[in-house]
Image 1 (tube, rainbow, N blue to C red):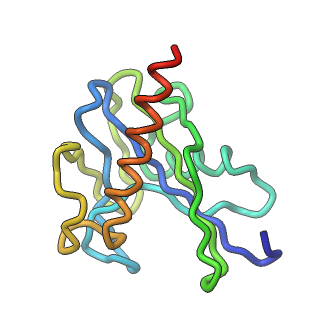
Image 2: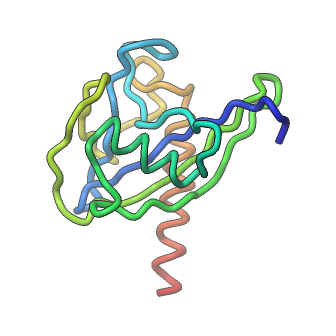
Amino acid sequence: MTRNMKRYNVIVIYDADEENLLMCHRAKDPYKGMLNFVGGKVEPGETEEEAAYRELFEETGITRDDIRLTHVMDFRYYLADMELEIYSGKLMQPVPLIEEVNKLIWISRKENFCDMERFAGNCNIEHILQMVDLFRSESLKTR
């Protein structure tokens, strides 16, 4: 990793029944007005996991007691000098959500996340979900 690489995270959150995903309605650019995962910046001096749980709590009110996050994969954007870390988890029980800046909404996993008029990321959301779903199904087989 280069010294000045910006690091961000996004967090894929399934509800307790694993039927819906928590999304935020972006209030600012990039992707203002579109649906996206929650997440944010990794601050200097904090680990990736600390940053993921901090951002999750700040944006939703969800705590470590409500969910266990798994670091699934990363994307590195060399030309933008940026790394995006992908985390996923399933709520252990329903949790009242506390919105920070962006409106929060539960979206069915059956949605078309490649709809670029509704969802941020130019179909990256669907790709991320496919990888997370693959990881989740593989980890269930080994239990």
